[in-house]
Picture 1 (tube, helix red, strand yellow):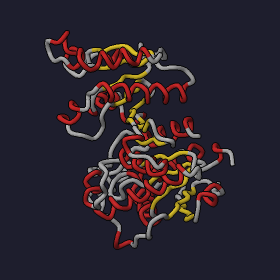
Picture 2 (cartoon, rainbow, N blue to C red; picture 1 turned 45 degrees about the horizontal axis):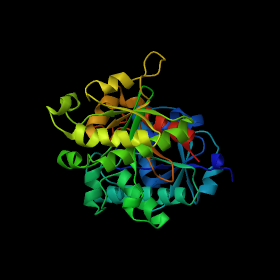
Picture 3 (tube, rainbow, N blue to C red; picture 1 turned 60 degrees about the horizontal axis):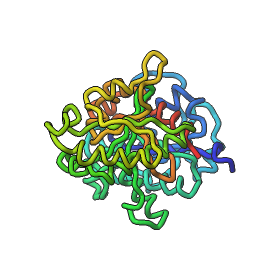
Length: 352
């Protein structure tokens, strides 16, 4: 079957968060956009979300949930306002449903099981891409899941599928919206650990992964800007030597390999230089950030509605909304599905 006709898997996310709500809203408000998607999750969880929206918003039409037995059957679901749900875990009863907005081991295990199933299906070529609704890291811990988030979980799945060590399946997180793309050298670690992760090898690996992903996605080699670690990019060593001793040597090696890379630049200005505005491309195609918050704050400040999280380096396509589980509004029907819809659009453009 042509990959573009294979379904895309939408994983449930944390059942106590806004994931199920925004999935229902996406299918309800943009049915053509969601055509060809199947929800990998739990039918009772999705039914609760659909009922919540029907009661809170009195919105017509009402959504119909159709349980399917496999992705092939899901591909045949074409009725409007119908959400195909693939039950890949033991079904929850109504009494077992996690409470809205509360950390739950049940929700953590369910979310992780759905991600693993979808990843394995993507690796087998049964689905063309996966879009993941938000996880809650405390719920994963409560469930005994040994990963802090999606990225690390998917990396382990891909490594096991390829029969290699996890370290031999390097991945990176990219956060993107129509104005800015940023890729992180380190992901879900403490700030102290993130500073220790600023090494020549890690920076060079990030540049290689980003270069290959952007070349495959856009058809042209990207111009990558690299943010410094220290204020003013170290100010020639006055505010730290990481730029001189680590970042610049990594950039020199990347240029020797044929990559177009500039920097290191002051972290407080490089994102503005890379930002696309008024229909004009920015000075750079993507910014390489040294740690999680350095890269994600600028993108999220521009608005989470169009932000998309993309995992680079995997032998599968995975995107996600750029927000979390939003426990504070879960169960209120207030959540916005825009970022999920943007993640679906990105995955559709990238899928194999």
